[in-house]
Every structure is written in C-alpha cells, then in structure tokens.
Image: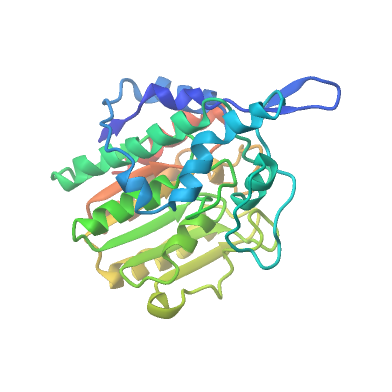
Length: 333
C-alpha cells in the first residue's frame, strides 16, 4: 500500500503549562508520527492542493482564525500556546468578535487543542497528505494510507477540538464527492468522530458509520449516541455503533459486521477509513482491549468489501506500540 507523509506535520508541538511554571506534552505529540514512520519506512511526498479543498469543508472565518490565532495570542503579550477558556453553550451564533480569547471559545468546543506556533502549518499539510493519498486511489490504486497528524475527525466546519484542527477525512471525502464519487466513511477510532458526523449529518450523498466507545462514558460525550441517524436529506445516512469499555475482539466483530453491511447497502464507490489505534489494550487514554494481531483481521473484513479505500490516521497514543498496531492493520489489506 502506498503511504503518504509530509514532515511539516511535526511542527505542531503544543505543551500544557502547569501552575508551577513547567510544561508537559499533550498525548498527541510528534512522537506518534515518528513511531509510525519508524515502522513503515519511507513514505511518498505530498502535493499541495491549495486551500480550495479546505474551504469546501471549513468556513472561511474559521480558517482565517486558525491561521492567525497563535500570532494574535502572542500579540496580547502572552507566552505559550493559545487556548480557550469560555464557550457559548447556548445560542451559539456568528459574532464579530475581536479579542483572541473570545475567538478561541467561538471556534472550539473544548480545551484539549491548544494552538501552537506550528499548528496551522502542520494541520495544513496533514490535510494535503490526505488529499495526496486520495489522488492515488482516484488514479486507480486499490488503497492508500495517509499519515495525518494532527488528526482531524473531531473538528467540524467551524470548530476545533479533540486534538483536531482540520478534518482530513472529511476534506478527502468531499474532494472525492466533488469528482462524482459516492463516498462512505468508516470511523474506527476509539472516540466518536463527532466533527465528521456533523459535517455530513444533513447530507444523503455521504454515509458516515462509526464504531466507538459509548459516549455516555467516554469523550466526546455529547455526540455518537445510537439515536443519531442524520437529519433532513441525511436521515439514515449516519450509523453509530457505541460499544462499552472493555470491548474485545469477540464483541467488536459483530458491530464491525453491522457497519460493513450498512456500507455495502449504501453501495459506495470509495471508502474513507478514519483509523485510530487507540482501541488497543495498552492505550493510555482509551479502554477497549484489542490486541495488535487483531487489527489485521479487522482490516481484512473491511477489505472484503472490495472497494477502493483511503486510510486516514486518527488517534492512537500508546506510542511504543503504535507502529506495530498500524502495520498490523495495513497488512490486512
């Protein structure tokens, strides 16, 4: 399988400031990508598709905010990374806000995604990586892998969150749809891809299917419940299959088969897979119990659909096992 990566994705390296003046790295660190590269070997270079595909998914005001947020934060005299602390929980609406503190709340849904000096550059090239891998699939390759970092499936049209800034899977899916392809998205990260769901929730031309931890217990809590099935033209084009903590392969596979049956019924021409290795038993922030060897069988079931497939990297925070987990998954194709 052809693999795509751009080293500019390493520029995103936020740190959490402690009250004692020190800093600790976030779980989503450059070491994740470095571990994957060590396991996969050299990857192909990425082409710059410009901002057009980003604008097809994310609104102009959000992109402008993301581009300037760190500079605007520093302009107030602050050090460190830009991070929000106030959010509009009711009557969220477009406002002409000036102070960066307000914009951080306007364009995010949590405090887990600080904006560092290199965040825009890394997120931009993460999206370009997904688009470059998509090019390979549209040109006839059966499957391609996009090593996207930072990940993307938690961010929506006009908000960031969950370590995510640009929605790589959605950007690729929208680009494929613009080429006339019927697209399905399968999200198999431990956490629900709330941003991807939100982007396509009212559309019937893109199917979104997700297996994830039950949001009654796990992040992102407010989305990913089984009764969320789409709205308007998108009614029935969303399928959520929440699973309890402790889910092992024997409990995971029936849900996966249900997801694949839904995808087969939709009859897509392309499958975008948001792959998260945080379903691994040793993941430090997640609670499924899948083993490294399980991923090959999971991928083989997905591959049996016989569809062209784009695999987009999402989460996975057991860095020492990340390369082996991804290698196992890709071997299933």
